[in-house]
Length: 333
Image (cartoon, rainbow, N blue to C red; front, side, top):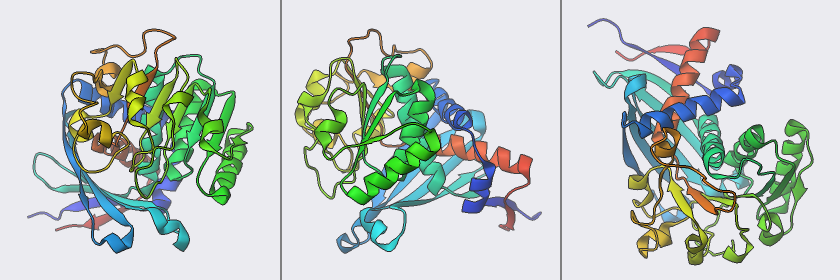
């Protein structure tokens, strides 16, 4: 057999790619388009919990995108208390394979990739489900994905007011400082959830709760707004879905599988099912279902994170790495 090689991109390689906002958005939208056209296979994520004492778990995401001729498996650790050791709460590796032979194509440090694709999914959901004139963002959470939520939402909407809140004062202050420095506009740090989200056009709930707790009150949500909850443990009230005109998910098969997710209680109690679900974002992207249809719609987009987004963005990273001569060739066999 001839030698088999695969590409390895480490964190430094990924940073040197200098992906633009539009490159990230376009890649993730391409994955959604393939999903909407039925050109993908996605299996619900599974979880590995090594020990309850470790305060974390692993997510394993699997998928296939036919137009890219790539299958992928991403493993991401989700450890809430990592900040105490100066570590990111989420660290990941993405494996890409040739779906025709099973041979490895690439291995990527997917920590930054996960942050970027999560923010892109938030922003693309808002592009289709928020009011086009949305200008006020209320963002709960200051983890790594939060930066890309705000950055890419601002890219699409040119936000006039950005409010942020998180549990720890030092994290929200540092988050706001980074946003102000890189976006070049003021950011309001709030002391509580209510002042952050009340009256906002777009509300993103990306909290890091240790257990489900209804901290985001339905009464604070303004008619005509978009709510994007994606915390691992639910921070919303059961009544949140009652005020929504459209509820959209990234993948329904994944939405009602596994123990985690912002609307887990809504699915488990029967308040969210295929009857009152408007559809998947990929269906909207390809025009199979409508997005926002009026200014007074109040909408919700719940995403748990797509393996397809990982694969699509990973493919874009590989292409740019080849153009820039980045990465290492490692021998597999």
